[in-house]
Length: 335
Image (tube, rainbow, N blue to C red; front, side, top):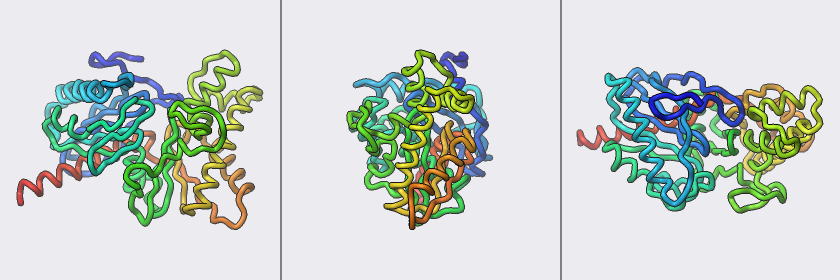
């Protein structure tokens, strides 16, 4: 990890991907945005022109009973550094998106297995610390909204957005709107498809076998060899490594089963796949198309579409939501 401003930067994520430049969100209010993941945080200031300034990725503080408060303090430290580096950008609102079960309407982080919290009042904590309006939502639901507005899902009103990174999370777009079910919809990574244990406490969860983090971990467990992310395992499988081939084949089978279940139940027009693993190209998309077609019969096979926002969909969604909070605050002040 490289040092930057007193907090180390995460150079590559669990899939081996480096941080890419973020797309613009268009003109509007300047905002501060955070995308909190299980292992790292993306942070940036978005100016009135919509361009991201100071985009970086840093480690997420370890989970535990006081993790909500420690996380907010880490975000405040990152914000202080960003504002010192870009004093011309004065944010009017904050966007904060997090993993797990999220009650966005009430600003509550209901449950996060990776970060170790339950019923955490994240929006209130952030609003108190920053003194600004705070938009709070689920990370992948926000990523799906950004993909719908700016990226790979913009041609589809009915779609599943699947983010494959440290874990696997999903979001549902129905008639062009996120389907949330009080924050419980979209937990595709924790849909049971087998009998292996998962850190969340359930059994057979998809992300325990098919996430980028699980692929790298399972290869290391099988061989005793540490690898630099899932993409290295995929490359080893292509070169004929038997252990890598087994781990990758099992991950593909699990992903195929999960997408087949989604296809049979909600019939999405497209499944938009993001996260670091989506850059595996044909090794992922061609295999999934072939396996999905072989598994299903009369069903409408969804288009399998790469996400377009280079792993930054979550923070772009966070910034878009922050813009909404800034507009709402301005409307209230002018009423």
